[in-house]
Length: 137
Image (cartoon, rainbow, N blue to C red; front, side):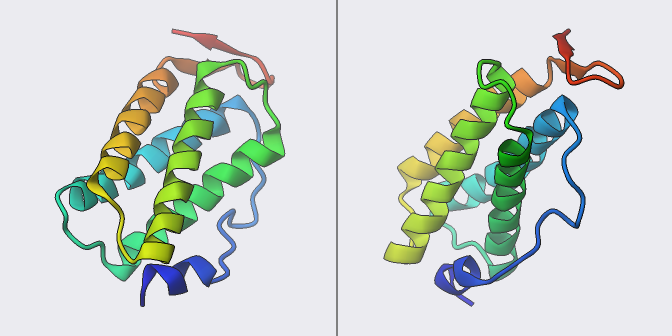
C-alpha cells in the first residue's frame, strides 16, 4: 500500500470518544509527537516508512485535528499552537508523500523540531480537574 492509498482510506480515528478538555490537547500533542518523531527518524535518514507506519501517522494526525476542531480551544496557549503547527507539518508530510511518492529530509527535520517544541510545552500543561481551565507547572 502506498501513502496515496493510505491517505485516501477512511478511518474513524476518534474511537467514538469526543475530547473532554485541555488535557486532551496535551495528550494529542504527546501522541502525535511520538508518532511523528518516530517517522521523522526514518524519513530524515532517507529510510522508507512501512504501510503501518504511514497509517499510524495519518490516524494520529486525524485524531489530533479532531481534538483541535472539537475543542475549539483558546488558540493563544502554546499547547494549542504547538499542536496546530505539528498537525500542519504532518499533513504536509502526508500530502507531499502522496503527491511525490517521497518526502524530503528537510520536511522530516522540520516535523521533528516542531514536535519537540510542542511536546516540551505540553509537558508543562496540567489540566485542572473538572474544568476547562489549566495551569502551568
